[in-house]
Image (cartoon, one colour):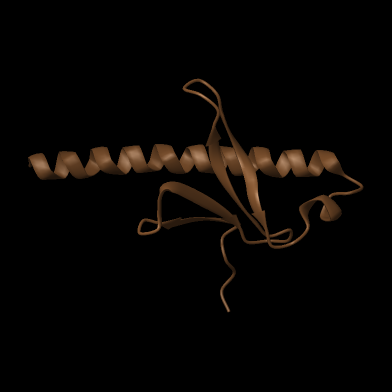
Length: 95
């Protein structure tokens, strides 16, 4: 079986169109999403655990923070890729 990527995007446009989730496929497995407190403040946070995240990182809480930072970097790279991909499609349409 092929190895899954570390992070995957998951969404449900039919029953939950407002949210886009990030699935962490390695232990500890969990779903996270971008949480917006207001127009200027947003962050990535775990919203559903498959494995107990706190138990997994009980002796190394800094590793949890490091993982969330990696996830956030990955997510914002994904968002940039979406924007760039949309621009490429627009350029092709203009030809």
